[in-house]
Length: 590
Image 1 (cartoon, rainbow, N blue to C red):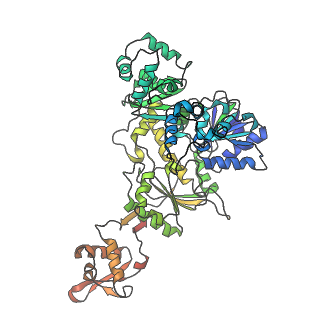
Image 2 (cartoon, rainbow, N blue to C red):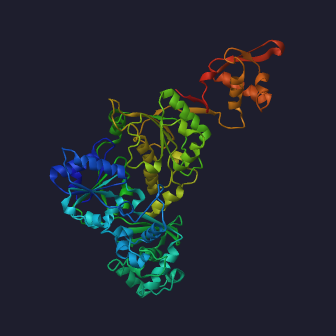
């Protein structure tokens, strides 16, 4: 498949699930054919893996990591959260966010910062040294998706893009468009506008100068206007922001789409905020292959700005067998609910934490848990860390192998990004997407393209999360059992369904935990009998609620009860209360 992909004239998309060898395969192909290749991937740990493969005796490929301004320049000081540690770094990154390249910042540091950068005091900065690397000297170049913008690293080389780049090629601007456009048109003599507001008011008119500028902008695209501007709001994408407001077309759902030419597009809900999709120019690459286990072809073609030939390894029926027999995955769906947790609003720790506790008890292992970032923040406040071996959010999964040897996994909720993100991606493609009235959850309908976006950003992301577990074989063991607490799986996946019902004991008002603790406080509680009053006297809830909770514990099998004696009172005794969970009672359907 790799050989077939690199021999096509279009970008080839190799569709193959994990452990099929597609990533290693591109390096093996390079070694066998002696062709030079550049690989782009989302994370450093995945690039580390590529680097290790290159050093293997079977391949023996010379390899070079492409430089990163943030990692390789000694003048950039960041703390553990990636924030500037000093005032100089803050200024440097401010210039970088204006679109000024790291090389230019070094070359013009005296003018831009009023001083030479410290990294150049004792010679040339290591970042600049790496920028000037002799690409012909290396069989393999390794970099992040954003490195694809520098054609020196792709021209006359074969290119592999590992996994869907997502929004790596998208730049978002909210609230910065107006000042950036004003800063640009102030300098651009070919445009007859004083500022942003003047542009908006005049753009409906047929102005010859504007039409000429549109025709000429790409052949004379000048990003250095930022360096000539005294306006701190200037940005290298000022021309594109200007073009977007001149070329915008309103879609049926009020979003705006702008075709900027040269394969670039923009989308925005208002004139003041735009998302720019800027595919890299790979026209001079020898050939381009994309690697993805769960691709949506419409989105791949959108982000690459080109047609793509899809080369699938398996059909849907074969994929299910691959999950079970090759990856060794047992997928258990625990709910028919959609559970969109990305925004944090639908997260329910008082229901989900008991589920995590029960699964760990049933399986006799401590699970790894994947959910949304906002979900993790809520779960951590309710004791998840004590129940999970490790946790991660959906946003940190791409290219990660952190759960490679974790044999029990739980997926809590799905990463639905919200209607506005579905609409934005559709608008970038020029489609109007709206949630059809009356549809929700798994049956949500955004129209053809919007549904493709939802497939990529929701169902496929859930499956990708499932496949993070148990990828590595160790001590003769491979695969994992993964419980999925959402219905958002691709249609072709056939999970075992064991739906849960949860009686949560985590809320303060119902007092179940207080009742259990009151029982534990009784002298000789495992062997004695007691009445409702014995418990109600020890907890701050009414006799009625105490009786209700005791009856519930009987129904769930933790206690026994009978009536007799004076007044035919209820008596209770222990059955297995010492086995009661901490967070709630959970039952699975058979």
